[in-house]
Image 1 (cartoon, rainbow, N blue to C red):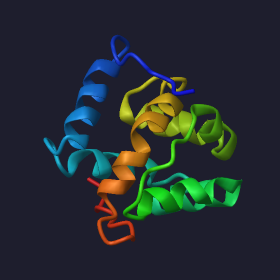
Image 2 (cartoon, rainbow, N blue to C red):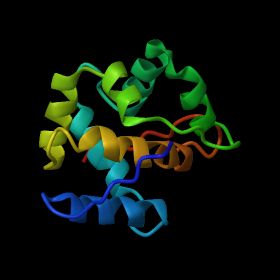
Image 3 (cartoon, one colour):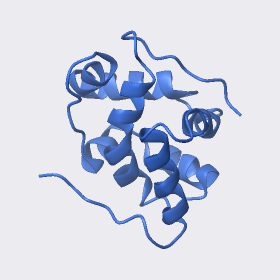
Image 4 (spheres, one colour):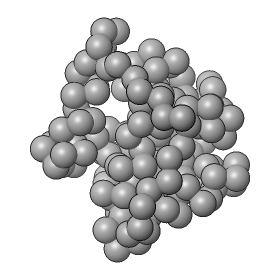
Length: 130
């Protein structure tokens, strides 16, 4: 089933609010650029690299659904934790000012919609890092 995460406390309120406003079109470009910056210097490099890692871990069907114009398939925090290296996730979380254990849940909740918004033509339009 779906996992619902409260974004209150431990710095998640601001980040959760930021994600919500991005997904509703409010802040537009900030979150993708922040994520790209947080991924720079990791083995994944950027959002494209993150998606490639998810595909190589057997989550290609989900990634393809986010990039295409159809319905976005869900992904679980466990899928993300299994597909991505925890030390890298912890590093990205630290750069975003989040506890490491919160990032997989937030990514599971928001990544499909975020990637969908960044790929209006079926290919990821990666913003430059900030």
